[in-house]
Amino acid sequence: MKINYKYLFMAGLLTTGMTACVDDNDWGTDSSHNRLFGAQDIQVSAMATTAEVTFDRLPSVDYYILELNTDSLYQEDFHAGSRIDTVRESPYILTGLTGETTYFLRIKAFSNSGTAPSLWSYFEDGDLRSFETDGEQIFYSVASADRTENTIRLTWLAEAEVTHVDIYASEEAFEAGEAVLQTYEITADDLAAAACTISGLEAQTEYWFVIYNGETKRGEIGASTTAPMPDADLKISLEEGITLIDQVLIDDLAAQAQAAAGGASDYSLTLGIPGGATIDVHGVDEETGEAAGLAIPEGLSVIFFALPGERPTLNFPKSLEIGGTHGYIRFDGLTIVDGGCQYFINEGNGATIGDFTLTNCMIDNMSRSIVRLQASDAVTFNDITIDNCVVTNIGSGGYAVFRVDNAAYTIGAINVTNSTFSNVGHNFIQAGKCALAEVNISGVTFYNAPNNASRYLVDANGNNTNVNVENTLFGLTPGRGIRTDGTITVTNSFKTTDGVFSSNDFDVDVTSPEAASAEVFTDPENGDFTLLIDDLNGIGDPRWYTE
Image (cartoon, rainbow, N blue to C red; front, side, top):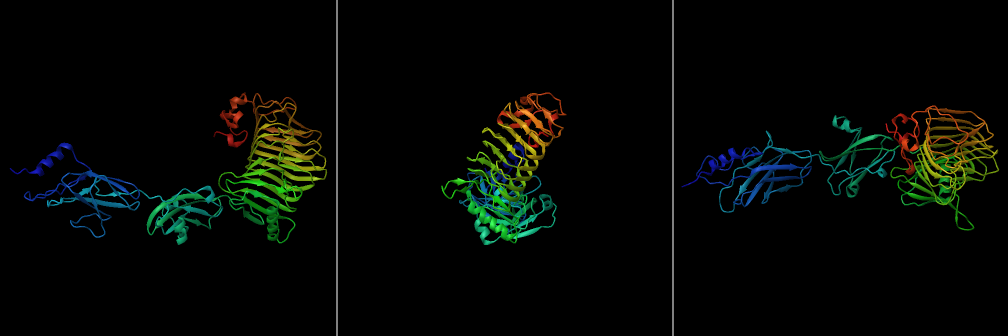
């Protein structure tokens, strides 16, 4: 007796339920013609350029033919342009696919015994006989070191086939089909390096980059250019790998800057310090060959500027020498290390400085001072400014953070803003006799500053120095407050209950809540001054706010 397997199979389907594929193929209407059963329960799990195909493989089948096409596979014979794979195992991995592409897939079973092949079994997903690959992403993330103020360096998967990069104003602009800002054609050198540099971009601006192979999108990524290097007669970045800024180098750069300024006696340099670099800064004593203080050349205004990447470090075995005339001397985005200098500035010569500024800098374990003046000649600063800095463990060597106590000195203002000072071993500002017009303290967190019962926050004894304090938070201190013959103005400032100065105290206008430092700061002993009390947000260094 001949068994009609077709009806047995259909009964099985009714028993077990429908699967993700429909087998409309195995036997046909002529029951006298034996065929192989087709592949059942075809499933596809698609990625960007690969897809895993699984199906129920029958032992009577020697191999399967898999046909893949972006067309709908509607005809019985193979379609033009189809990909044909011989498959002997399940699961089977399809490679070399294109991202964000719709594919149609079908499978036919074959036997070497002469039994007729099955009809086609089609992959189905709901009402569709297709699947779609994910978007491809061959871009690597853009490193900080690959960003400048007007360029972005893009990198991608090695040996990937790509032709060009389209640049858009934003991801939203790309999604909305807005116009391309520019198209970069990838060169043979770019292909070999699997990288290219997009130039002509605006500083401090976000862009969206889409990479293609012909019309096929292979990746997309966003990146922003950096803030511009401050302008100067000469803007130059140190090469990667340089570990020393010495007198020869700074003199050479100064000569280039002066030439760029047309030989003017007042000229400027912005020196870019590579991200993550650690660089020694010192001259060399001609007699002993030992390290000496690096002298800023006469007339040069200079900015030491951190380039993108991990914060670079400048190590000073000797103090920086700033004698002479300079429009400005500035440090931006750096870690400054006492490598033996004890004082960052320890000037013994006459000087006229427009402004001396530290912005976004970190200083830890400076033995003595940031600025100490010891000259008997006249020294003039328009301003000394500390902004957005964190300074810890300073002054243990017995000197004030700013020691400018001589009648030969004239300073317009010492400005300290949006910064944190903790564990200050001596006076914060020592300005007896100096003609210091004013001290401006705004948005600052002080902790254990000063940490010595005989030292002052500001000691301008005998001077008419005006001291202005606002938005400032005073934590633990056993020290003394502000001594000056000038006016003391304090607004929107707060003291912890252990932040009361032992003498020369001053009133603050924010008196609630009453709380000790341990209740106000997260972990002050380990330098975490994140605020625990919401009502104090807006007071102190903004980096510690919680809203």
